[in-house]
Length: 241
Image (cartoon, rainbow, N blue to C red; front, side, top):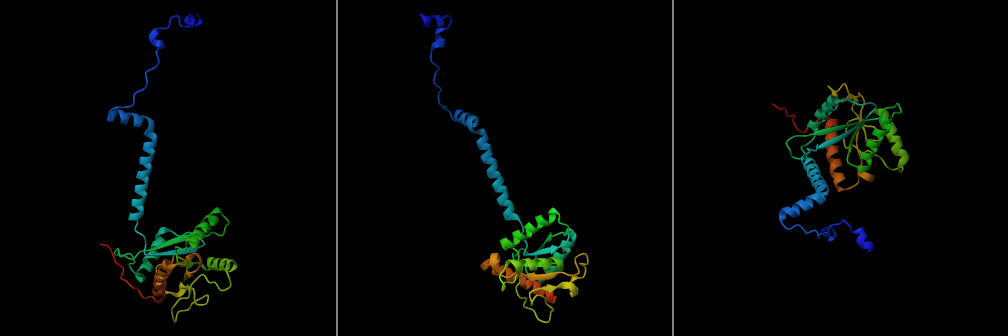
């Protein structure tokens, strides 16, 4: 009786159990069901794949330089000044990647003496290259070189030197024959915006810069620097036109 009281006014068809949902039968129904449940997951995967393809394509299409110079200075230099330095160095190098041109990239790491956050940020950039061992050709302003050399000495064993010996004769060298100041070099004409004194050197193949590929990169950078020191260009500058 109690059940019947509760069911007063309820239609018989409403008491029937709901029909069991039928799985999609046609390809269109299956696609609509998939899209309804997994649309955002699908779009996320597609977006990730597209981003990966773009990144890979960009990395493969990047024209990497034949040589990289890390220029450590007291303050930043404009892109035009760095470009002038790159163009001055390029005739002394070789087309290592056989793309028809000699390319030198000058990366300026400036370390201001004002205690600003920029000093610490750029110090990390320098440390990153040192740990990675991906750059062998360096140029320092004297004050920066003195500070850097002291840091290396404090952190290393007594017989370790950061720069390798420069195999040149009749050219005044510093630091036991491992560093060269371009102050009197005639080839620095036209680069008056850059420091009058720059100390060049090539990193030794040791520590984080050890390895077979490192030896090859170091020899290539050494050949470029020695040719520059002797003012003996290896290639002719090409002009577009």
